[in-house]
Structures are given as C-alpha cells and as structure tokens.
Length: 122
Image (cartoon, rainbow, N blue to C red; front, side):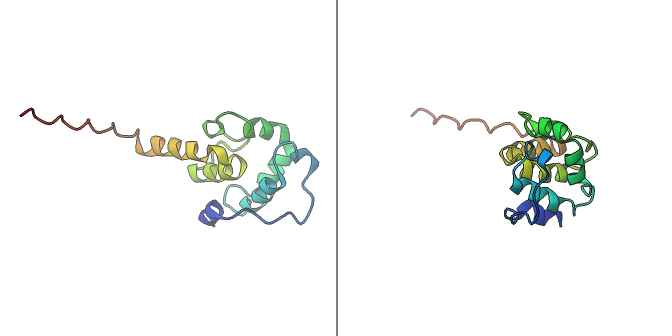
C-alpha cells in the first residue's frame, strides 16, 4: 500500500547485508526502505536497478534538488512514487517535492491578501 509506505515508521534492520556497491549511495535504513518500496507498482526492480547503477543513483541522491530530476531509469514515475523515493532517500527534500507537486498540478500559490486599510482619521 503506497500510502502506508509514505507514512510508515523507519523500516526494521536488514536481515541480510546490504550490497557493497550500494553502501556509498545510502544507509542500511534507506536500503531497507527501498526493499519495501519494491512492493509498489512501478518500483518492482528498484533494488536491482540501484545495485546495477550505483554510481548514477549516487549522483541523483546527492543532487541539490533531486525532486527536479528523474531518478536514473525512472522517467515515468508518477508524482506519488517520486514522493516515496524522496521521502526515503532524501527526506530533507520532501517539503520541496510537495511544493513542486502542488505548483505543477494545482498552479502557483495565490497572491497574499492586501494589507488591512488604515483607520480613517477623526
């Protein structure tokens, strides 16, 4: 369940060691989250893809604004899947991803209201 993955607590510790080539890309907790995300439609090969392209994934994970770039090999992710990846791989960018999603799908934020009128002189 995708919603469950978004709101889930940190995953349990790994039952098997994390692949060596992945250790430079993410922590064990992040890798464990990737293993769980594979249950999501469209992410079934996520861990195999990260293992095979660890250098490309490392470049994406460490981008200043990964929410504005496609993850390697995942150009067709829907916005929710992108949010899942960012939540688990770059939690510091989730708010920016949500802002980007809102602006893209709902439009820019409305202008701020005008300041209150000054009281009339007596």
